[in-house]
Image (cartoon, rainbow, N blue to C red; front, side):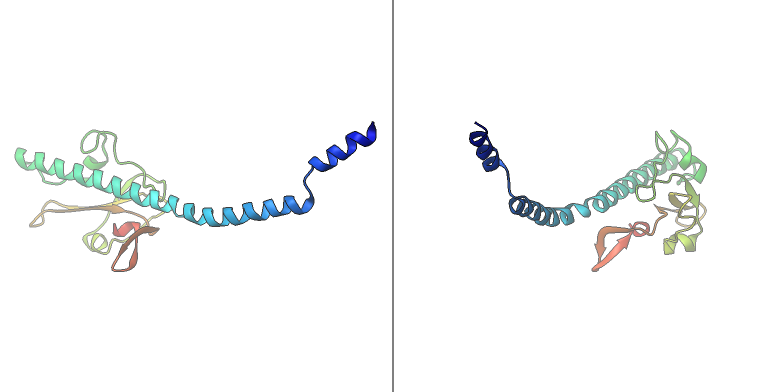
Length: 161
């Protein structure tokens, strides 16, 4: 009876070679799939930064429209921008690349150069001059992280979006 059971068990098992072939095939498939998803995080962060920039810039434009109609300064001050409910209902969100919140004031030359300062401490940069002719404001990401966007064949950093 033992002789009849043992051959069945041996026949049902996989050989070491068969197991290794399966492992190699899975490794090849994983090597083909992983690179396709490795850029997904960077693409999602880029899209999120662009979305946040669009939301904040649109909110600043809406503030400007209301302010011009009412005779106030056209662009919000740094305090108005960061106070919840004045420009943005929930305040300025965190920068998706750095996961850091907060907005800091920058000079005109820094805004033109899209300078990044205190990168590990502040998420966004804001320049505003309501006394300039015309009044100007600039809001951008405080990060040198590479994005998935290109301009003229060059990969843009988050502060250049």
